[in-house]
Length: 435
Image 1 (cartoon, rainbow, N blue to C red):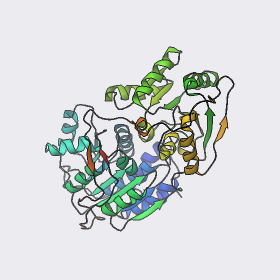
Image 2 (cartoon, helix red, strand yellow):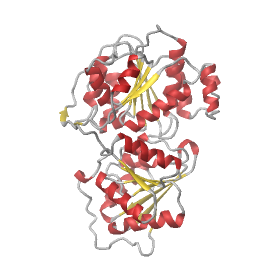
Image 3 (cartoon, rainbow, N blue to C red):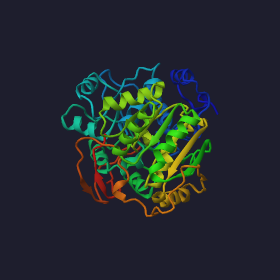
Image 4 (cartoon, rainbow, N blue to C red):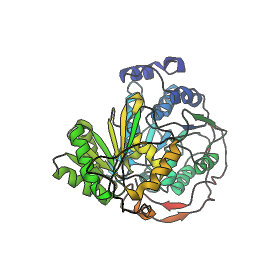
């Protein structure tokens, strides 16, 4: 199947061709016709399989084929959990709309809001946003969502995991009931499916690959090692393997900073990216990593989904995540779009339970190796590290900790047809502004 056979307009086909794409991925092949038909869609696919184009292309086709008045109200809203993902999605929107009369902009926290508000005042058709900054500008009456025709919730499972349920409900309340709704994500938990019932109207569920599976192009390996020897083992692997570009995941912000300093002191160019870094610092670190001036990017789970580095060869779990699904998202930064990639995990005794849970989730045993001089400590406890020491993916300066219950209300919207239901979904979680 070709992109042309999907019924996309010539300007879109021209933009797709310019990016070098010729054949739609499975998720694109399945989702694009449904979205173009105006259906609500619940779509699941592995990271790196083209989910963004799966909703961006049909959205641009619809908006360009159905132009509105010269004053451009926000007609489409794409909501993402992190700044990096928002920027990545907006880049795709701009690339694919190059030959269309479509305006778009992106808004997120951590930067001055004035340029963002000015762009909205000039009129935009598509707004890509993170929840915190979107609600901030909405509450200041600097933007209106009353004319939204298409609402896209990207990485919906990550949204719930980061405590954005109430923010999602507030956004839904600000939009008209008559709209098309799309939910795209790498995985769908029971909570996500419950959320979908409150947002989507008679949705079609699309699944390109089984949930929580890893891309076949990714080679996975575990190095069993004593906890104290992890930094030196990582340096050995990078240096002797002559790795040129490595994304390393650490569980905490402090740990990411500490490891970055250790790498730099060993003569390896490195930078850290996490929620305590300013947006400017995060952007600079990512740019350096992409252009090759920074060899190693050390990140917390804030980067597990928002980063798109073409042909990234190596991902290292310096520490395993205590949430098994995060392993899939982390290593999904490599092996994208069919390219080969290697995922290495440095596993100490106290991460044994995490490794077992990950293998159970992905349905396979990961190859284990022990290097001489870096053997695991036979006397170390296999007791898992405390949950509180786990996920610290990043955040904003203002983290509110309002507990949200499983039963909560909010408007929902149908497939461009009126529908009023309450949203009664989500997990109990802290509502944290991390964007």
